[in-house]
Length: 215
Image 1 (tube, rainbow, N blue to C red):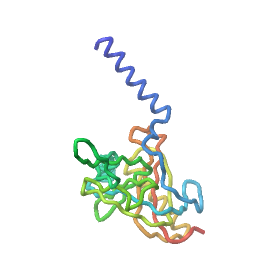
Image 2: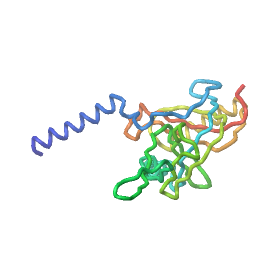
Image 3: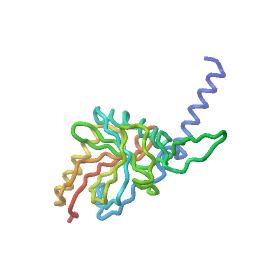
Image 4: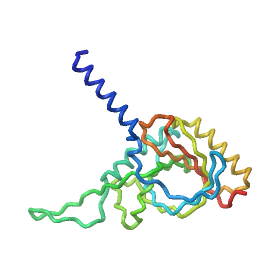
């Protein structure tokens, strides 16, 4: 290894470290799903969520692989791989071109089991509606409106593993049962951070729709 190569590699390591320490790991998500906390109990919460619009794709695979498989097409959609519904500027010579619209990243990235597959979704910024969002170029991506809902949530940090997911899902299901809350839907796995965020700084949640308040 030459001295130049060693210095260059050291510079890359320092740069990545500084990005992590200065909070660049939050660059993925500048807006979070809005909700009101109804009850807090240690790591558990009962929340009331406002309506949300999701960009969603259905993929095969296990819990951990499905998120990786779905992330790329969803990220391409918000990065401009879409048919913008805005006005199209005239160019010269006489021509007209539709430009893909960039959409801000939001949090969380959600994953839910549906008929043996996984529905992975990005929440769309609140400034968009179903009518104003650009149509995805990828036919596998759909836009879906989720109505206001009541949700039981558990929050934890650590690696994105199936083991930790199942452990905390079991804890949340027990909390729901102990508080006599009625389950109204399937669990949703929510992740709030970029993949390169250190495991101990990650915010992970499991959300289960419910229909009654905790006592």
